[in-house]
Image 1 (cartoon, rainbow, N blue to C red):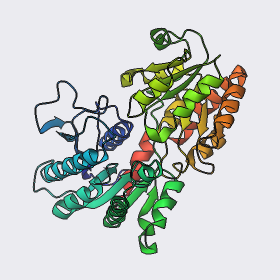
Image 2: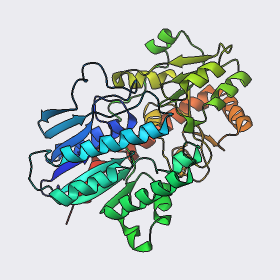
Image 3: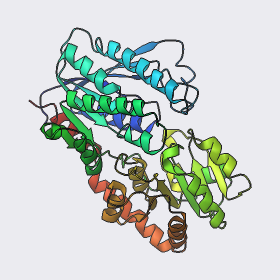
Length: 411
């Protein structure tokens, strides 16, 4: 039974047709809430994730407004730099983006209409205070959705080393949480991480709502895909990484594993800051293949191309990030080989679903041994894939996730 019709303003860094994982998540949450009869007004960026610049056909305006059956979408310039490596440039871009988002949020859906709440997403962390600003002027509750705990991930990967910047980021993080009516994390690990940073009186704000996967859109397919032919890899057994090619994923270890396992094909599918360095490291390795981002309509096909999917994270990141690709891989009926901190969410998912293997992060010997053992037993791979599909069908319904967000705005 739905609660009363809500009028919500949604602040997020990406939204369809942008293909960023966070954009896919928020797009589906919005659509599920719209199905439940709510009015939503999204303020987001112009599509820019694929090539880190505003896509062709979308440039030429600081913002664009679209009317929809369920509300509206306001898209503003992301102020993205040419590279993710320039941290100062990215920070300035995030701040400018968040300021424009905040200003547009005041008129989203028609000002000065009062709203029932704001749903803001991080990263970027700056959207937390933007959401609070919107709430001050338009009322309602602020729900802050945290996909990755910042600045922890940036500190762990060495992206931020300046102690003053780290201190300011941690202040901004705590302030954003304290200004929110609810802070939503994807797992108990992330929730515990956030609670440790807050006074006990704020702990009740912290909630766990996992991400979801659309099992109607991502379905198991034959491994002999058209994408295999495009990549020129034939019927070979494929170890795949599909997603953002960043520095937090320890993908250099994948290149090292390819040297140890020349009989297997390793496919790195995606784009990101670390791709160029990986291409250089893989020179002379004929069993390492790089694929570009594909349209979201081909996601099932891309995932079906991999016989074993890698989900690697650098040591210490398992408690601050839950790679959403894990759910998609299982929905595609493919097994996972994860290199993630023990006793965090991904190892727990694999233990519950019996759909893969997990080793310690940054342990090349253990990773190679795990991949070799999985590759040597095709029948076991198939069974892992089947079990993973069954698990996501029963645990990650988009409708149930949307209902849990809806309940956060109850009186």
